[in-house]
Length: 383
Ligand code: XIL
Image 1 (cartoon, protein in one colour):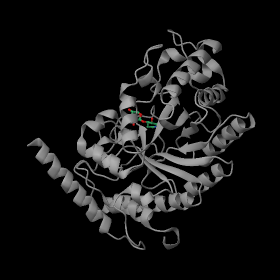
Image 2 (cartoon, helix red, strand yellow):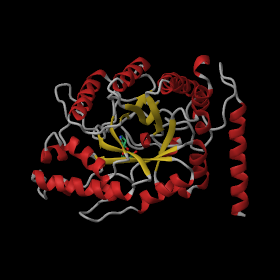
Image 3 (cartoon, rainbow, N blue to C red):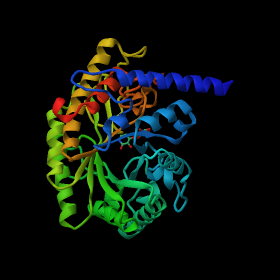
């Protein structure tokens, strides 16, 4: 009985998607059925999931059909992979790696060094004091060696360091446990350790709001310093946690061009568009939790907002695909798959009902999906 139900619902899902395939958007010739078909080999199109999402066959099917790249939303982070010294737990991440391989999806490792979701012992002693540099470096190297080697040949690229640039106007690098213990060169060392562990794997620097002029300037400086020191860096990942009304697409366009001018590839690594009101503006600083916040769309996104969100996705994708066609942007990854799994239901305010992605909670494609696939399906000259 369950199998029958499953078959019927998968069938419905498939026909839904076929219906999508025949829908033309303005200016496009023929819209493809899935994002990965529409993107072809011009750009990787990814999603971030957790391994338990694969327990839901409808969701697993949608992920495999729509995307050709996969990022572990949490399960490749240091706290997941090495919760206690020397105790590595790879099961959840391996499950994602197997799924990616089965469905011919490029797997991204997120992340080797970050100040969140990282075990304290790696860079601090029990009283919270920084470990001596040599010990911290040893911990960093052991983590990177073990993890990068474990996923050799399966992960195509690592977010080696995540969010190292300070949000403060007057500060270059963020004050983090790794930096306090090792010094500013913890970033370069992490890239070197990763490269030594797997010379074939791509190495990325990943951060939020680095399309904005202030953080952009500092990120350009970081890339230049790494390059001048002879450290391999392949790409910069702009997270892309954006709002319905900002940043302006010109800012995104300019930032991609600026990074590309340094000879690195650019990727949008954690795309979502937040339609809910925020008190403190854009960004993805996990410590910036707002205690209260309006939750105006608990019962669903009104049509007018759906249209606005779709229009916003359209304008973003017009810029991204222009850059992809120019060879500067090589991947666009959504942070989540459907609205029900988005981290924005809990950030920056816990427990809201958010609607930032391309599928709703029933896994129906939203107007935003049609907007995105419409742009992906339209040849450069016809956009
Ligand atoms: C988020 C996950 O989506 C959440 O499930 C988790 O509770 C916190 O981290 N920038 C990043 C991601 O680089 O790793 C974060 O992911 C979102 C912000």
